Image 1 (cartoon, rainbow, N blue to C red):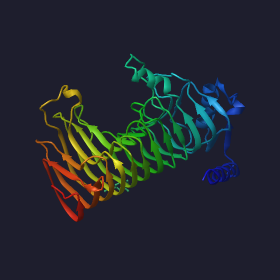
Image 2 (tube, protein in one colour):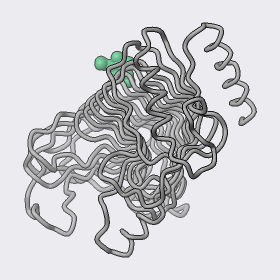
Image 3 (cartoon, rainbow, N blue to C red):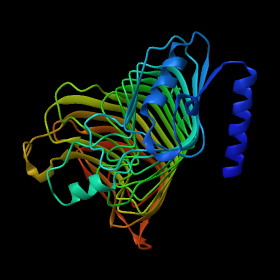
Image 4 (tube, rainbow, N blue to C red):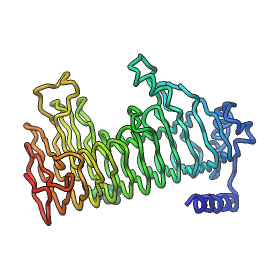
Length: 385
Ligand SMILES: *[C@@H]1O[C@H](CO)[C@@H](O)[C@H](O)[C@H]1NC(C)=O
């Protein structure tokens, strides 16, 4: 696989040169692969050249370890075909802790990133949080904001302080062949978070972190997630929604061919038990394997941590047209299917189709509250819809 990737990378290099586009190697801008010299300036200068070029442009990060303090790659650019080939590793300073993302692309249209390893060095930041001390805010690893037509292919990412990849206010973003890792006990290290974004594809990736593999917040629409290995972590989640007023709805989400191993949740929709209105509509979870997952199938509309600011309230988020199809494997707890919907906005159009979940090779259970829907094919545990 690694060899195949290297081969692909070489082909892509050759293509990029034969199409005679401008190429900027960060080594030529003074970057040192010693893991100690800050390469922020060389990277940003290479970006300025590529972004300012009227022709398609290529940035090359060669092999070696490049320390990067922080970089904001700002658009709009003069061309819509920038490619960044990363052969080496880009590492964050330990204890970065900043409020802003470590690596950010803003207002960029037409960018492809191939290969590379990004090491967020979040260990000392997590240690501060886990010790319950007052800590800096922490940083997202890679942020894509207000951008269009972005491809991230074959990226390896590890140990972000917070979320690894954040996609915000963007459309046409594809993440393929990513490998994201952080320890199971690292707090808030979601793999990929999608918010206020449309036409997002995440495919062929493996995500092992301390929080959600993939999370979708308000305004995630037309999202396609396919061939993902998830775990350890908290699963694939829509939400938490409805924590604040006037959130955008979540619509047309497909999650298929996912394997969850030892995760806290499998597929989940979660809203606050608060009256703020909103909706989730048109979600398909298909061909999912659960291996020892604590809560394989969950809709929870009563999220109210520590019972603060919401006890006794009812979620104003309307959840409808959610299909769970070909979901099989093992639950680590007895309730394998849990629908706990809002008393004021019951879930509707929930469909269970060919479900086979067991609990320690015994019969698992279903739980239903304020939910309407239907079943087809076989459904184990027996449905309470
Ligand atoms: C749903 O989203 C997919 C992309 O994930 C898109 O191809 C499809 O056209 C969308 N469907 C509708 C009805 O918008």
